[in-house]
Length: 438
Image (cartoon, rainbow, N blue to C red; front, side, top):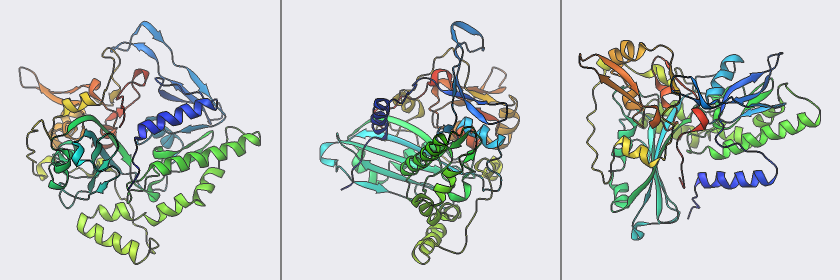
């Protein structure tokens, strides 16, 4: 009985509505860097350069970035935004709050047999196939056109470096409650994205001179309900209303204090306050976490006199490979379960081959000297797109190969790399996955 629609299509419709109101939208132009005024306040953003080759040299079609100035700039890059990271560090927006924690959501869209289709049916799951100590859960949504959306979210605070969220998702589809819907159908789309799941205690300070963070850039997801779109819309609305007040008063470049004030007085804040202990409880294991969060919600109605906290960042939770057991994942059968490369093909990912790599290493020696040595190169497994490979030359010397053209912009590498050596930046032209009705 639910109404289920494509968020991609909703955003396209919203874009047309916004343009009809005079809003200018620049598809294909990624915000590459933040601009500042002399007083240190945010002045706007500059879009990425176009036409550099893979060596960083200007090609015949080179175009410099375009500066976009504003009295206020709202940052809405989604989970783990690369500009948001810079702003949090520059303005110390995370001072006094818990580390942010994330999940990786991987999704496929299937066209299933007519007799198996139940439009409006929603299924949510918890746990399996993950072990009892690793947070995660899945979903199956029946849309229109005989399509279903099936996906799995793995909490990125997992400890075993041999765990592969992609393979766990493939195993998830083999459960009897799901495979019955999918067998005989056709997989038509694939995608993945990190989600910001820390909740209220991990929210950074939302404002700084000249701008604000909105949506999953800050982290308004209600992880207990697997809902975040309403939080993104609400936070954007509250920030826009604060901008309207400031602009009407002739202000610019200062802090939009009306925005966090309005958030604290909103129904969204009350909702996140009630759910604040969900993710910390679930990090203690599925059985204990479910029981304690149930008590939190039913006995205290979300008003328990305590608030649990996130103690460590996701990248710091990995154990050394020698301390963990390897996981033997079954080979894909090509009918229900698949490999990474065929999946990337269905994401319609497009990166021009001869452009600078948008996945930067702070220290090129770390992948082998630290990640491979101590963690058996976990980037080979946490990436759901086959971007990172350990290859060996004729002398059996290993090196990290980065297949940047495969990247589907989930940001998992930027989050989970144990040494925080990998930095994701916007690729040239905002290229990447081009999702259709997903």
